[in-house]
Amino acid sequence: MASVNRRVLPGFSLTLGYTVFYLGLLVLLPITAVFVKASSLSLHDFLGAVWTERARAAYLLTFGTSFLAALTNVVLGALLAWVLTRYTFPGKRILDALVDLPLALPTAVGGLVYASLYVENGWLGRHLVPLGIRGAYTRLGIVLVLVFVGLPFVVRTVQPVLEDLDPETEEASSSLGATRWQTFAFVILPTLVPALITGFALAFARSIGEYGSVVFISGNMPFKTEIAPILIVARLEEFAYGEATAIAVVLLVISFSMLLVVNLLESWSRRHDR
Image (cartoon, rainbow, N blue to C red; front, side, top):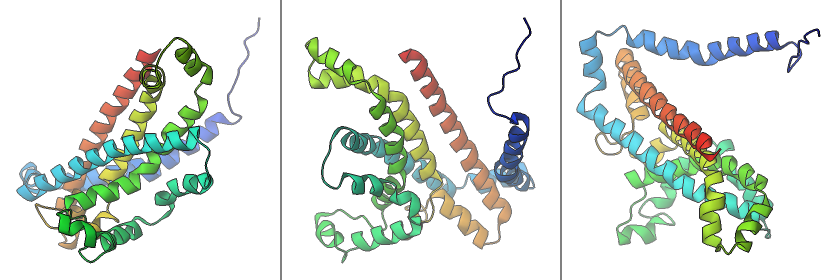
């Protein structure tokens, strides 16, 4: 019997070639340029640029606030996706559209709005500051804007999974005597875990590289509210291009490593569910 050559798409080789070309042009080439520029520094100069006390404080703040914001987005995003999927109410389509607003809105506008809201005389700040809650020019403000920019990634990742869940599975769980919380914990949640991990990874990665919104609300104070992307810009303004690219390399390597770990956990979770 003659073998049949089956192809998923016509012209697969050509389209694959274009894909690899543009991936290399838009992603691999800039990353390679960063590493080449950083390699112009000696090992001593590289370590001196990336491991200063100011740089370590910026790394800790960047990854700490990004991690906290991503965790917050997992909770809020899952809750919002659940409401949009399981309930019908007036204004549902408007709320669904508003979820994508941070993706369309310039993040600098979001940061400016948050800063004006949480300053001492802002609409929210005038009530929160007397209580000791300061949202502007603090680490709390950084977390708030990172939650704002990362929320759509979790919602749009979890929402399709909830829509595809088979209602008969939940009905079977209920008919066997399980409570609503038991059904959620042992039937629904295991199905959502891979999507939640993916949403967390996307929100975390988005937060690490965020600059536009943070620059307006953080105050950019070294050792206090200065994140790593702002430190890179500060080095560029000082014409220290080698030091700036060195910090970018550290940020890139750590970000890729953490995303790789998250993806491995996601793959393990999917295999475990099977």
